[in-house]
Image (cartoon, rainbow, N blue to C red; front, side, top):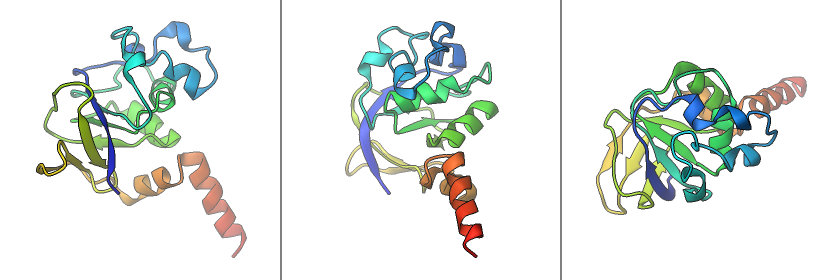
Length: 167
């Protein structure tokens, strides 16, 4: 399913300390974390995001520590999907577990912040304009699509457990 949002662009090797700086780790909700997301890279970042926005990053997004606050902050800021050529492995797992879609697109994307973009995280496709070419990224495996469809790992496990208990 295609999602339209505004595109934002950030460079490569953005680590979890830049995504969610240490002073904010005590915040409890995703929304509170979202008010400070990426402030370790640029204090202006949190004010740019609106629900449904898409973040395009360079390679190795989410490197560094294993703090799950980083993807939680992105989700709390309303980021609908992060698109990058590669993600740090632990960040990738944390993001999928909380229901934040990630899309691997080999070409590094750059552009003007705030421009419209269309993303289909189920098929792994991106369009930079309404009639523009479709860029094909990696289609997520079925288990990841199922986890994201349920909103994260815990809702997925609960749904599977409920389905098994009714058999």
